[in-house]
Image (cartoon, rainbow, N blue to C red):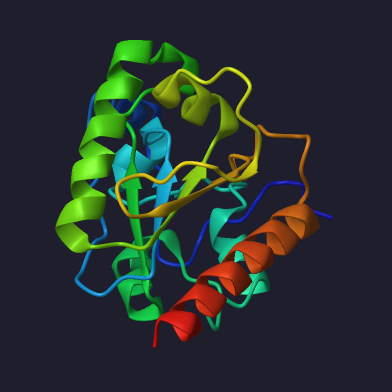
Length: 197
């Protein structure tokens, strides 16, 4: 059995030189009017910046979790990230610049990203935000005791949900755990959409 993870279809693996050159690079947000949910990562990995798509590193559980949870009708490839708006979801990051590790970011960068996030939520009138990273949320808000789940305070008019980071480095959660958490999130978002109609 081959233990190497397969790459998403159509995605070329970046060379070490391309990964190094991706440091500080950015990825376009995935946004459109009428979204129900904005998914927020911490910042792009070098791999994602090198290929120009969100959550692109093989082993990241983000795209499988969306499909497993029924948010998308199939597992999208990272190169299809712009299709996510057709499912009522958008994508952004607290910090736009790519790094090898999230711990290379300063607290000031994350807090500035939080302010940018608040502006996006207001501009696009997004009712739900899901932050994918408990530590990043704690840093952004200054609330060291914040826990995963729906947060007690709104971000503008948006309800905030905090989920674990789906990176393959997060060994505390498995694919089935992410599927369950994303399904619970989506059920909440859909129920709110239905009650607002």
